[in-house]
Length: 366
Image (cartoon, rainbow, N blue to C red):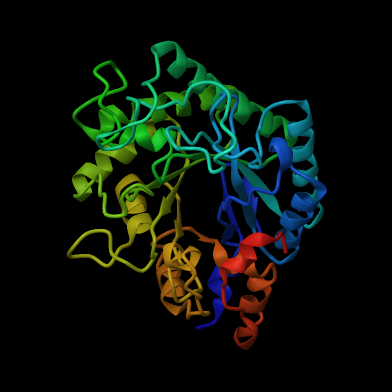
């Protein structure tokens, strides 16, 4: 199929994109002591030059002592750190692209470096890194309030620096998602509940604080997932009704766009329909959605990072879904990490030039 559906402009709430392609956030760990470098800025500029409409940056830590578990992952607070991000945004804008920082707090996730630990205690809803696995202490009400404020301040800084939108990382078993998941949220206060919409209060309060900080016309994205890095089989909302209740709590609080993470975008979310996660989210809420999950590659990311190579794969099914408006935007991860010109090749029909993904691509900023 012709790829023109991917290259149609899209506008929403002041976010004007030249096409439907989004660079998915991917942790790179090339920012010494949390400060992005010129190499990082040029890495993002190359993707903007390569016809990516919206770049969502790698996760970048908000202003909490243990928001990150890697000293070489960037932060989104502090004078040097924000100056670096302003440079990144300027480089992307020079190529006609748009950019959003992904605002992140990893929560109860151990340091990736055995010789380094972040300052302060690890934040989590209930002192659990996964069901039944003790890790640190649960956050006090004061710590919860401070974390909410940290996300809001980062969002305000992003708007001030010229980023077109922001994304909150609410997926994959990190802090916001740890509040969603009953396996890690055993709180008995207002941030805990037996039902998923109740456990969404932390995310909803962040969204409300962010909305207050950026105003009514600035678009806000939240990334969500059913699966967790701690357990790929988790399905927090096993029915459309439960999914609607969860997502409505987020959209009512200020989420404008839902970035719906799957390991494989083509898999149906519920029996009886071929709609994927992003398709169901759009159907149930009416808000725009982003689909993501192994776009353009034969293998999904878990196997790829374990060493299994992924080959270029057809995107015909993706194009059909996009043309029928199952979702609005398409996020591409590893294919763009491997090749900054992936989108150009797709647009020009140069499929024979598409590259396979090998995890050695993670070792450099190509």
